[in-house]
Amino acid sequence: MQNHVETLAIAWAEHDGLESWMLAAPDARPLSQATLQDIVSDYLASHDPFPDGMSVEVARQGGSGWEPAVIIERPGTDEWTVEYDDGTQAWRDHSELRPRR
Image (cartoon, rainbow, N blue to C red; front, top):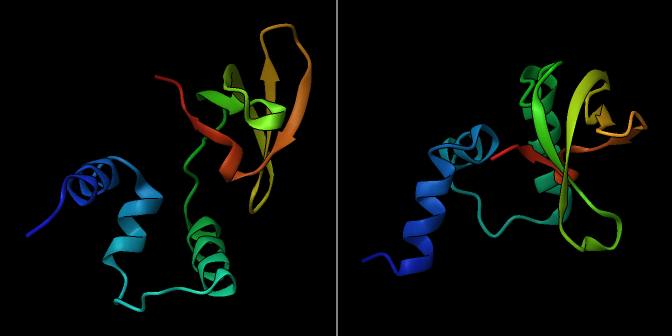
């Protein structure tokens, strides 16, 4: 029987491509940090969860919330150029981005 947290995680995973892809992989848990990074790198090499022009939210430095931006380009496997509302640009990895709600 699933607990409430597992139920929420599965519901979220159904709408998050990376998480869905990881859940579909063979069960190798617990995963080491190196293994998890390899899985994420493999996924990102063949998927683009943040295409150019997509509206996203970017984690603020220090983890104090999220702010809106737009994806400008993807210069690397785990690197996206974002542009904030004031026109400034920055480079962020997948852990600092999420689709705008």
